[in-house]
Image (tube, rainbow, N blue to C red; front, side, top):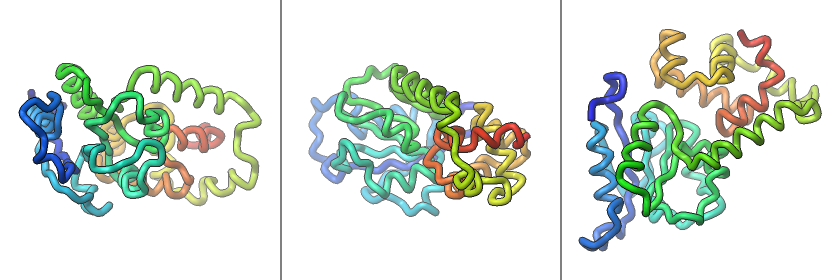
Length: 234
């Protein structure tokens, strides 16, 4: 499979230390088989049994985490939440009906793959991720969008004056204001980079700064928190 838009991706894999116990009869997307699928999408991969630092994570376009490496079902580990703000984190080898997808989405996780998914669906999801899209069940995306629309359409959900001051324009640079406006229109990182003539990594750095300044964990929260500013960010 050719690289998306001619850009070759790099990915980090956090693998379970017990992976060598997988038998020949293991499910088709055990860690080794899942990485093989990723490679067919012309993605360079590096695997390790320890998470990289936040600075190191910026060298990767995608970070795949074998959920067997972390025993969590509800509260997302702090290490993963921190990384999700600086790079695109994807979970795989997940057991269905255990993880709260909407919570993962709100925490800026880029996607999740389950053990029993078909090979063609996994490949489709990887391709979507290469296009800077997210990979969750459709009902999760619809539910999150519906909640966002309810919030932004209710006047009493807008921040009060004190909250507005904390994310007012003086706390953001001109470039950050511009990026917020583009994000609110649904622009992806590559589209923002093309329009502003900067690299995708620079866009990621700006977004990380914006999330910190606005106390947002992801794009959905950013749009919700800055909705009242969007008309002035053009």
